[in-house]
Amino acid sequence: MYQPDDIVNMLKAAGEATRLRLIALLAEGELSVKDFTEILDQSQPRISRHLKLLADANLVSRYAEGAWAYYRLCESGPGSAFADWLKTQIDRNAQQLRQDREKLDAVRKARREEAEEFFATIAGSWDKLRSLHAPDSAVEAEILSLFDGIKVDTLLDLGTGTGRMLELLAGHYRQGIGIDSSREMLRVARSKLEAEGISNGQVRLGDIGALEDFAGAADRVVLHQVLHYFDDPGAAVSSAARCLRAEGQMIVVDFAPHEMEFLRDEQAHRRLGLSDAQMGNWAQAAGLSVASRKAIPPETEIGLTVCLWVLEHAETTGQHA
Ligand SMILES: C[S@@+](CC[C@H](N)C(=O)[O-])C[C@H]1O[C@@H](n2cnc3c(N)ncnc32)[C@H](O)[C@@H]1O
Picture 1 (cartoon, rainbow, N blue to C red):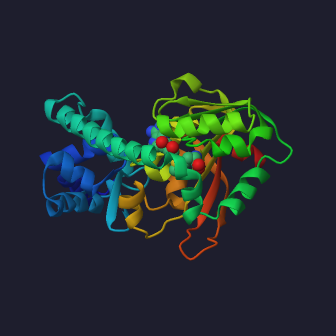
Picture 2 (cartoon, helix red, strand yellow):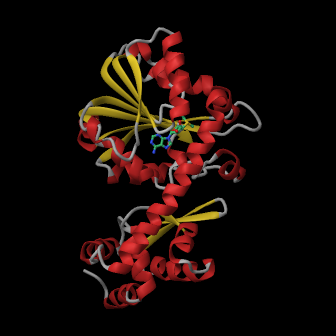
Picture 3 (cartoon, helix red, strand yellow):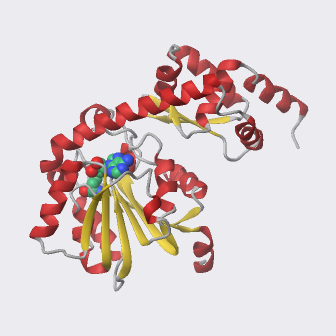
């Protein structure tokens, strides 16, 4: 039940053509102010003003990340039910909204291509580049400890890159499948797996956003240093979650929030690390919960903290509690 003032505020906020377009776009996932300015072709101050009104009415939530701000429709709190209702009532095929969505797809495609170009260029040196900012050996020891005495049937390594996780965990799966959208990274991965004689690990070209072939197939899914390349990491978590068996676990390894803005330009990062609160929200939206979380501090001055989250289906975590 809402207070009359709150209803008036929510209706006023949503009752304007541009703001309704913003809400319809946010129904597609998390977006930055920059995304909105590119899609709507309106100035940043204008877009920010509209978003502020929506945030003040509790319809959207804001997450500041370095110089950027990301927005999503509220999933809890006073405005979430109204935002949810709006989402189901808007005709996605109305001409303007369809055009907005097409622009969103184009913006995302251009970014994906930029990232693919980046990975094509650095494929040969990725294994060295990875440890530039991450305490690699400590992180790998932590990952291995999650497999202590365990051999799973099927492991999916999403965004496998040069296949390091398939290599590290080769003794802990019967069948390991690495998926990646970069042919160049996969080329390096294939020759590495072959050179190491890892016959139970294989890699395939694929998109983390389209994993239908692997629905319910994996005992463990690994996303190692991948999510910060996504505009909307939550969508990737949801897609990955659909690959898990009922008792399966997802292991997400990524940077904690940081302020190294240059990584966006120089290394195709989209997000400056991931927070525990975000991971909790993304897990919840994917029907999972965070079973454990560990932070591994940097080893060098230019290093970053790396976090390791284990996600499970919400009921499984309940059983362990
Ligand atoms: C930083 S690398 C990490 C590779 C590997 N997990 C590791 O830690 O060495 C990120 C990888 O994610 C892949 N990637 C990014 N977006 C993807 C997508 N939508 N679908 C599949 N792979 C993707 C990139 O091609 C890249 O190889």
